Amino acid sequence: TFVRVNNSAGLSVEITSPANNTYQNSTITIVAAASATSGISQVEFYNGSTTDGRNRIGVDTTPPYSITFTTSNVVDGAQLLIAKAYDNNGTALTAESVPITITVDNTAPTVTVQYPTATVYKKSGDALSVNYIYTETNPDKVQLNVSNNTHTAGGATFSTGLVSGTSVTRNDSVIINPTALEGTYNVTAVVLDRVSQRASNSQTQIVVVDNSAPTVSISSPTTGTINGTVTF
Image (cartoon, rainbow, N blue to C red; front, side):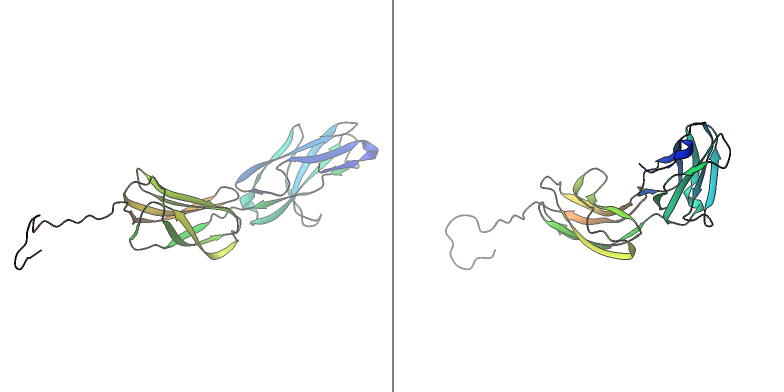
């Protein structure tokens, strides 16, 4: 528990939400628990790492002590959150929470499917290679789907080995389902970050699933004895 106590006044404060080392975006609520022998007069909330560098977010005078924090007001990346409690004996007796760290991410990912871009033919059980490029600082997972408006021919999710960066190139494979219906399908890549922001890109009508083997028969000549030259 991230608590700092002023023992002389029985004064303590801790940030209970959000959790330490989590990813956040948009507008969040910071919640603190505070107590003191003489009672609490107010809790102040800050973001920043040092006294000189702190930005006061706001103050709450009634429990549960909380404040709204618009993360788009700060740059993406690591941010420290601090709560400071005052007891009813005056400003001389205060306690601060141990700072917690959140990672702010308000920038959505991008993704582009690079291959296939021309029609490819597959049958059930085949592996389809998909090349794609994405940009994301905090990637969580990638989903590849082979589908059309009515059916899904294959899909795969990748959550390990994802690296952060700009124009990250990856190649992954999707296995065409054993029960995939014949038809034409789209290939879609979806990238999600750690705050569930997503981006998707598709190559449409690009994969043809064909499970039917060709057939052939001789129509002429018919069964029987052949004399002379025969034309097939």
